[in-house]
Image (cartoon, rainbow, N blue to C red; front, top):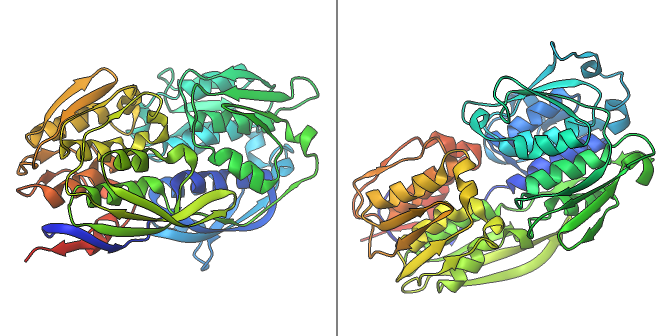
Length: 460
């Protein structure tokens, strides 16, 4: 990538990954045809679409591209056709004839979101489903969601490592309950609420989920859009079985997906660490549960404004404008903030490395359980660039430096967030970096490198 001294211009980021996953999975609850405009056409979301097609939904490109020919190309428009939840639960579907020995095999690829939220749907369906993923995903702990689904009546058989994929879910006989999560996870909450909608029988039809702190509420926004009743009181949400609360079939509804704040975060950090930069990112979702990167960069001195604010499918959307300061100031991120942007911490760590003063992150032990051990990788990569960094059990401390030395190894560990951070770091490093695998960026943002390059103003 050409050496730049600042970033200027406008960049349109791909559709929100979290919202795209939910728009696809929740389509299984509806009957009819819906268009998902601006969906994220990255590998993770294509994995979700592939699994749902195996369950009987039709998901094709709005331009006529057959679903099994869709490729990772960034923003795409999709058409989803579903025969409805009652069809999936009727016992007439092919997967209702499956057995534990011959389950329906579903491949989640590298997508933890697919595996976790889809498990909530499968727990309520009358069949046997084997969920697996790639080598990285199969190393990640899924017990936090599967343990709770087991308490609702789903049967889970691990093959062979307890708590990890591959595993078989045998569903269809769920009861409600009250669940108090020890870790603030929007994905676990979504899986349990989704399973709660599929509870069978007149008894125990309510499901209540409480998170220890605020999480992104994309699931509740999607429920509002689809007309699914729920009660929310702060961090506690209750749903009733759809058979009780909404016995008529849910009608399919079109969805417009805003830009992904997690993708925008890398451009915001890139601009913030390069004095003289000024960028605009249009039509970004700014859900209150996703505001960490903006809050932190504002504290560090970046001027960030929200323009043209509006709502799309109940989701807040705006154009984000950032003007870089002459120098960033250090700040801390506490445990209560981490759930608002844990995926953005690799990029924010880079901002800390180039800020004046000492920054600290705590309460982020979950970084060890992502696509890689991001906590260790963040610290090692910064250390390789001459930055003084201390790894903690649940976070890290960074002493800001004037520059990145460059010339050293930047490990990506086949992790898209580490790879994207590496490309941003290379813009400001004194020497070119030895970057690892960059193809993994296609998991969430095909074309990220090209879009970053377009913003770079080449030094004279």
